[in-house]
Length: 482
Image (cartoon, rainbow, N blue to C red; front, side, top):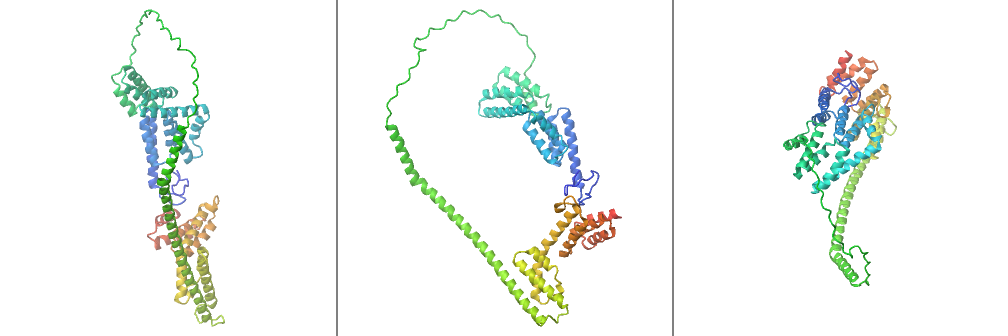
């Protein structure tokens, strides 16, 4: 089976994914229940309990929609009952979930390989739908005619047989009730537990199909009937009518009606339409104005914030010049070069942040020695940009590192553990409490054979972050290492 989290192949007996460490206990139970119901449905189908088999297979698919064996069998049962559309739907879904080595290909090709047969099924469905529509509108005779054609074409089409039998029973005629019973006797062989069929058969329990001896009745020769004499004028060619001169009066009446209609439209309908259009335009303009006001407000807020940030930067530059004494020296206990580099990175980060380049701003902030910053303004700027950029940066580098470990994304087809370690360390640089990055660093070192380094990261998660969801997985990996 495949892991529902990372889709990696996992042995059915394992309760945890080797690739991502996901707990498979519940998923294992679901797959087992799905297989149980599939086996039950298969047993029912073998004894022609198709109704029960459909119920079991649907239950199987509720537990595991990826169970293509159950879906293919459900399609076969639908096909046996004449439900070609439902059968093809199940096989197409099965093909979607399992593209290779799927028996659904064989079933669909068998139907589609014969265009005449496929067209016959389509015609059958159309006739059944037409008959159903006729029956709903009270045209039972037309429905019976169409259903007879459907049943002759596809004798196993259970719904068509049942509808035809119902129409026969509604007629109340003895011979039609006999025909209905024959139909039910035929389709009960297809599905022995169909409740509708069994109910109809119970309704027809008073009808017997025993063959009765045929009594020959001698036909008496009847006297030859003499047709009444025909009227000599009956078969004469009808002379064409003589065209009359066209009258202007009907045209005048039509013209007057059009004029009255246009007048009514102009005085009653057009003002209402114009009013509606005007209201729509007013509403649209109002909505547009509100949106523009909101955007202008947001832009104004951003501009004000950027102006304040720029003012703080200018003030800090002045303070830096003062600290350096104008000659590159400083009384600060921090090394002068470190101080200048930290402030330069801070200034660059602020400029990038103002320009909307938060990811690049985070790269500048991460290189700042926080201890070298003097004054509350510098620290406030540092903390503000750090809080708004580091979270995205740590997630970004973690996801790239995980992809490099799993061989996914930009690293599809190649698992680069060294690159994964580099990216995951960057993620920890932006957030030292990222237990996801710690866990995958341990996995990387474990794959590289450096078990001692892997243990350091697993133990760090267990000891320093006992509430992390990675703790059970870290313990499991420690047990593997031993």
